[in-house]
Image (cartoon, rainbow over all chains, first blue to last red; front, side, top):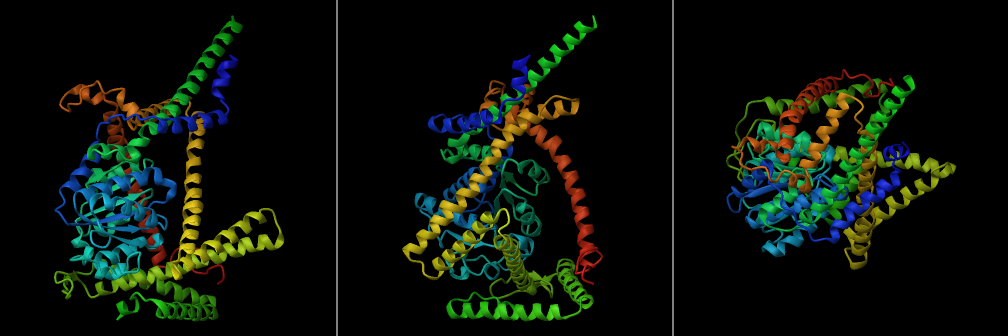
Length: 283
Length: 276
């Protein structure tokens, strides 16, 4: 009886310690588990593969260090694909941290794929998120004027990467890596009015909300959380941050499921014992 | 003409623009504060209405060809050329609201520090971090030498990013504790929720997907539907998506109603009514 009560009320410090170990230990192992590629990840891959060479992608990056575990891996794997496929892209941040975080990812990857900042890609920098809708509306109409300068204060109009890019109709694809609902503004003010295909990479907690847009065809593909990035890395045949974190993610989820099952089993067994005792007393 | 006002500026011109903008804004604020509250409300109402009207008209007014030397295929109406300047104006207004937030924070924390009330130490930490970050960022922009750059890296990477990541990571520990205590099969609904959660969680991880990997992956085979990731996808697209869409429709209609009320000045409690 006592053990059943203990199993229902495990001290939270033991839970915290177990989670810490479940997340940390897999990083010391070199285990790769193949995963089936989901339909939404496949669609995202196809959308980028179908882009004509040298076309222009608007790459929204609206995350901060808090969600780097998921959004950082998603940004990196999508950027790899864009660079591998030789298309131009522009980073646009509605979070002050992502401007710098994504600049570093792009700078790190550009040597690997022979890319050059200003020629093959550009970082438009940070814009205030509370003005998201109005800014995107202006951006869609006149990109060089609305953007002004890149993060190095160079007028984007003068950059080779911006050649032929005047308004939203010159954008071939929109991507948005986000832990919030910024992608909805992209859909409303840029993607749908100008009939531009759009793919998103939300955090796992935001993904359920985004499935409805996938269903309606307003987005062409999605990387759902870290698992989406794991699938995409597998699709590209690279071992990146997401694949390395895959086992940690699995262990953490299994731990939660294990504790939930344990707590419920103990509760049900205790109930059964109590009802038996009551029956015995009644007799 | 409006576009010319928002061209990027550098050096002395930038400083001149910033100073000019501050002086102009202070004059506007002073003039607004000098007006009696009743008229002030009307001015704000009018500005809100004109702002809303601009975007509504620009959206609904028929478009025609409006070629420019840079973009010969451009289409729009007589309001379209003003969309970019309006976007810039709203950016400036929102930048001011950030300033308002900073002033508010300084007032709240300043009072606490002066009075020595509980939490004064935290308030001092706020002032210290805000001032240091501000000074280092300005220094790094004005004189990008090695010391200033390293100071910025230290504060941004070593401080802000690490704190942000830590704060968010801590949530995982609370989720484990909360899920363990809250997910109990006390009713039919709770059991249903628990089973759904477990299936989605297992379907979301590599080890969970391994459990059903022996089931044929051929979509034409009926047994294929019992793979954990297929059940997860069914839950997400057939059960979750319609419910989310219904909520989104409700929110959209509610949002439209609220937007109309604000635009037409019908919303109670706004526009300085408490001062009127």
